[in-house]
Image (tube, rainbow over all chains, first blue to last red; front, side, top):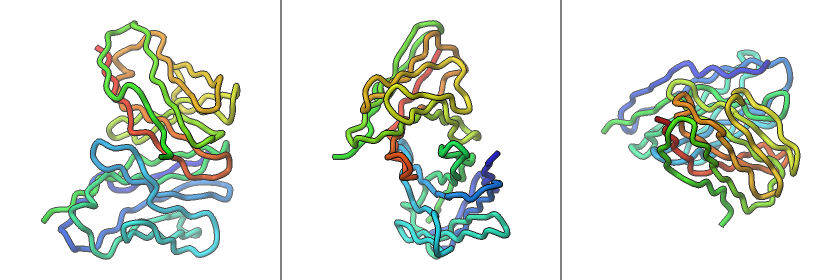
Length: 112
Length: 112
């Protein structure tokens, strides 16, 4: 069965510093991978997705992620964060039924 | 505007009092799904629907019912709510095979 592990539940970082949010998945089949963001008191919105092709995927708000098949990882990165990036980030993988399986989330806290 | 609309956004109720959380989408999506979000557990799928009159259980279906009589609506029914169903609920939809979910804004339910 597919599963997603987000290795850090909370990541505090100072403004303009780089950040990496880690995500590992397990699956015996080809996968599609996603990062969603949830700003305070809002629903989830798609940051970026990997379906096929280039392993480096660029998303909205300057985020990017790299699909690494050998390490079964899909880490999210941003070279310089802003206060407005404070949110909870969810990694997700497609399940065998075509549904999405989410990780437990990583809370990114950007401090001035 | 393309969107998924949930109602109510906030609800406090008592154990055993039946309630329905409505979900409506205006994008003609075939696939719709309900998730619950709990601290430290991420999003867990309750039920999903591949199309009208086709529904299936997700990971945590106990205590919930759904129906899909029309393409645009996918209500979540709690026949006899219990305190362990206190949670933040999200409805989402997408075109079948599209792999990009559109989420509603969430419904925060408290069962006393």
